Image 1 (cartoon, helix red, strand yellow):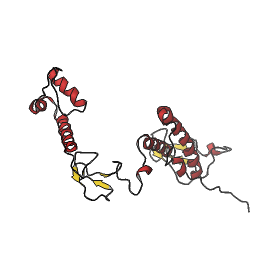
Image 2 (cartoon, one colour):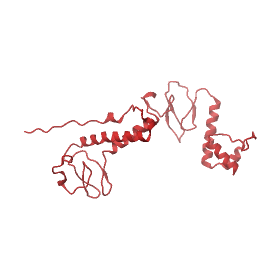
Image 3 (cartoon, one colour):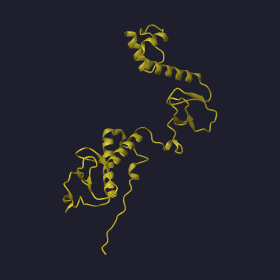
Image 4 (tube, one colour):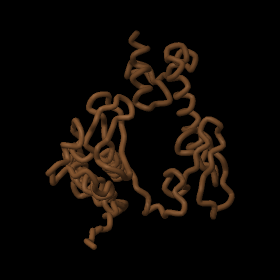
Length: 236
């Protein structure tokens, strides 16, 4: 059990070879013993790790490795910007310079990475969700492009106000109601909701990740929110 635990710890530390549990002993455990003590899923990862280490130590000119799997190949053309993995279990295309997924035609410095990408996606998901209504009774999700604001749930038949999202009995809800009018622009409603949710989502992300406080999003979702044109109704 001591040897098994020792090998397991060494494996989790990223090691390829497993020295004796006794610090004073310079010996290593045999491959046969390691194969007996490690579970199959860890053995597969260990063999991949050993293969990667052997490739690195070989220092073969022009040899490049896939960032996502052990596949390696000699790349002869220095002008080829993309590494194409031919491992059937991987088949990823990556940039040879920055090792990120293929981002052509963008330059490496134009590609979002790490927390910047995570922050943008977090905000985008919340902004998109702001347009979606949910039936208070059956949780059916819906949204409209045009038409009046008295909505009928297609699943359970409940009447819902599209503006305030509350359950209503009929058209009386819209009488003398400055906020919830019977008919107005869906684009205007959605725009205002998305702008508000943008602020909420950004503040929430920064609360959860204070290290991103100074982050400037190069593809800020706010830049894609198009303000609807102002329409006027003239009397004739």
